[in-house]
Image 1 (cartoon, helix red, strand yellow):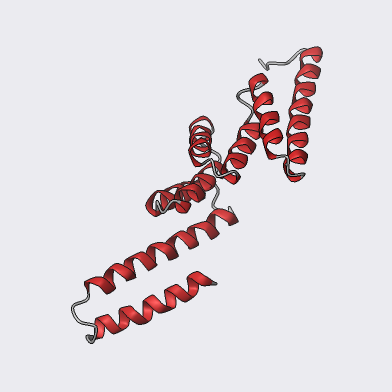
Image 2: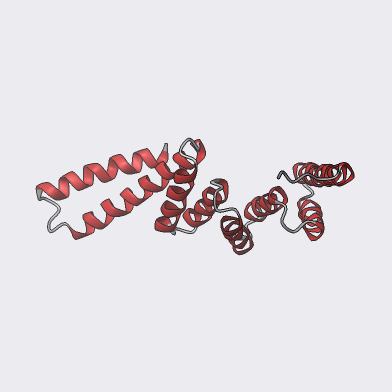
Length: 171
């Protein structure tokens, strides 16, 4: 037996989807016009009507992230990973937040999850490369501190590798 929506219910559902798209498009226009507070308010108001709307929630997370409201963005993207565990983008955005605050191991884990879900996610792959480079830099810096004498062969190798890694990071 196949479930069907009555034609009227289908029209209402389509109208609601269009309304959400209009809310999001309007909020994006406000955002791009520099009216960031108004854009956030519009998305938040739309979410009061449809609190489970993935696109609105994701947009709000991005807006909060761009505004520097790390705690709110972290909460939004964490909840998105719980509510939509098969989507890669919320994990990628979580990783950006983690990396920005120096939580590289958490960023790496989030990116690895994003790539398990969507192996061809180019942005997550690039972000993972950046995080791995930063992790490598951290490891080389620790190794340099632990090397016994600056003149030994290992210390010289570490110094060369550290310099190359720093150069890669600045590119």
